[in-house]
Length: 280
Image 1: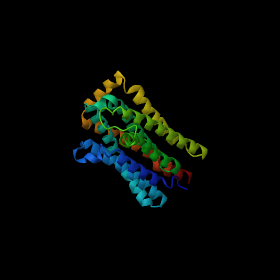
Image 2: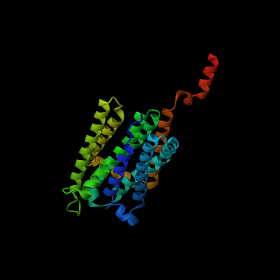
Image 3: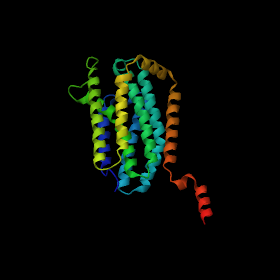
Image 4: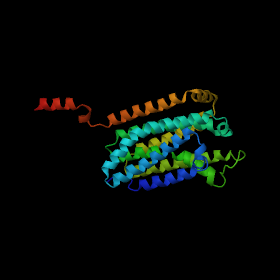
């Protein structure tokens, strides 16, 4: 039996949450939003829709659609990664109160998310013949996106966390704290559930580890002088170089995951045939 028969509905609910969370800062100002926000917004939305399609098609036995959506992910990942890195750079280039309070420190969390996202996708490719692991690693990529959406949802709609002016901007820090706690709690629940049901715990444990690293990076490294120097260096790089780096890393990780998941006969068909001939 395939895992998570209703996951596409939960992913769809997360899509609605994300649209609401970024409504004031992105969707409501689409004509004036920077092009890097469009790139990141479109590719992130496409990734969420892709996960919905993959899960729905697998449980409806629409294997052709499932295969095509899988191939689409190979193309989408490098663009998504490049877009995420460019948005991080764009945040560091802006001279705003948000950057002074949170943006620079958040950039290290964003970089950790980008790295973990690529890693989880590569592991999903490696375990593509094992549905329990493959599905969990694919869903783990989505878990990495929960924090940004949840913190902005709190800041935009939840009393006590609302950010309506520069005076209330520090409330975003409280929204971050709550979203970090909820993210880790959710990962712990998933790990515990998999442990109780004798399912692979590595994928959601990795998501938990990435979440903890993201939080540690934000609070423990993001406000240090050493990281401020790195952030200034990163912001000063040509955007094309940043994008190219994201594409190359994504392609190399995808190639590794694809080759690591091949059957022995696919890895060395000639050797297999030779061995069979010698045996005969």
